[in-house]
Amino acid sequence: MPPLAEDDLIHDWNHQEGGGRRARAIEFDDETLRDGLQSPSVIDPPIEAKVRILHLMEALGIHALDVGLPGSSPRAFADCLRLAQEIQQHKMRIRPNGAVRTLKSDVDPLIELSMQVGYPVEAAMFIGSSPIRFYAEGWTLDKVRALTEEAVSYAVKNGIPVMYVTEDTTRTDPEAIRDLFSTAMRAGAYRICVADTVGHITPEGTRRLLGYVRSVVDEVNPEVLIDWHGHSDRGLSVPNALAAIDAGADRIHGTGLGIGERCGNTPMDQLLVNLKLERLIETDLTPLSAYCEAVSQATGVPIPINYPAMGRDAFRTSTGVHAAAIIKARDRGASWLADRVYSGVPAEMIGRSQEIEIGFMSGMSNVNFYLRSRGIEPTRELEEEILQTAKQKKSVLSEDEVLGIAHAHIARVKAQLERAARGLEPARPDHPGVSEGGETGGF
Image (cartoon, rainbow, N blue to C red; front, side, top):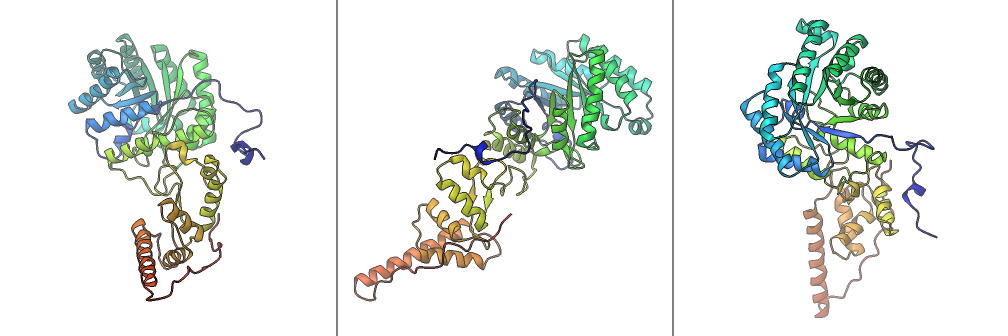
């Protein structure tokens, strides 16, 4: 019987019959080094760490990054300049943008930055648009419209491409959305960004809102591109980003590990994994683990053990039934099979591998595989000793514990054989032990 392919063994309800790839490619704007650093719990990394993260963004094929707020301080300007220079020196494909308020005075540092680096750096120009924000600030739609026209026009006249961002778009009324986006587009903005600033919206709401924004763009200038910027306050940032893509967004914003204000931003890593599995991108994601680790180390944000795809436990099991299935799949000879039989995300896709541990829910197959993978030929007596030790523990055995048992057992057997060779005691055959079963656990 010929070997089966993945599609023969997994019925995918996610994909509709006759469905295909979307017409336009999806782009990504990485906000890790701007919005990600607005979390009050993170460390602002040294510039060397930011450069390292930049190179990993490039390796992942991310199209743009927000280098920071160049007008906020001399140190921020210096970091923005260094990142933009690194892109130029290494002839990277990734393009920088800098966050600025919708004020001419905020645009000036970006103009200076562009002059020093030798190419235009895009403005991520933001201003609040929702009624609640207007009320809190004492703004009117007329005032915000005037600021928009003035700042966008000023930036464009000075050679700065503008992405115009309405903060809190997802709680803004249709009339204000139409008015502000139309003003920005007529003033020269080449992108507009729909922002779910407080993580308010749902996937269905995202589709409705993007449909409305698309109609406004088509009326004013169909060449203008639409960005989506989401937050995780309701835990919906990834579903919302997928809905935005489905509704026609051209570029999606995210941050490494989803760091950012309050509950954070759309996690760029989770977004890329989902899009790869949905066959909407073909990006090589093997650098993704290094990217997440670099963000974690640089910002001081630990990766939770159960974090999707990147957590310590994402591809690790000690459960007997699960381990037995993975081992049997591996023995079938297809590398992808062991990666998929008990995993919705292939570990190999992101440069990781399946790990089998020994714990209180393990079976003999866990022990046998664990020992063989470390170059130790198991005997039934040794397997039983390790498994019985594991059953009495409240957590999985560490590698030191397993190897300690194994080495002590081997030393005892060796001593017995030596005594038997000298006629001091009879040789003992290995005990037959328990049956191959005993695995516990399940779904």
